[in-house]
Length: 114
Image (cartoon, one colour):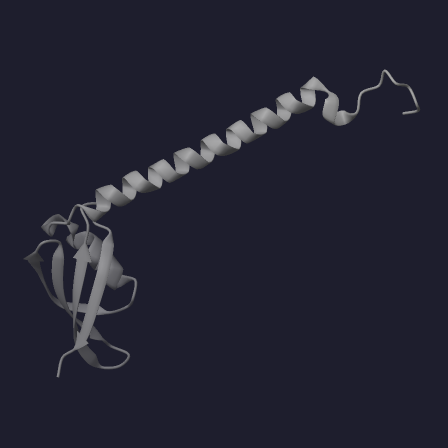
């Protein structure tokens, strides 16, 4: 570098500030899009409930747990009642599965049958 007074320091060069500005612009733009998308998804799913067409999502959830569905019924308002068998424990139980309008499972309540 030397002691040449005409040399500018790295932070005094125009291209440094251009690159820094573009970086921060891209960073904040991406963050704003991400938060806007999560808000839209949350507001859409929190205001909607599933219907009887969501039974395949409910069935897939149970098949992944190796439980055997003995009976299933749609009770309305996105709620399914599933009677299932846990073959490992030899226990029959009821599960109430709640879905949203995207057929995503939002809540599950399980109770053993006596």
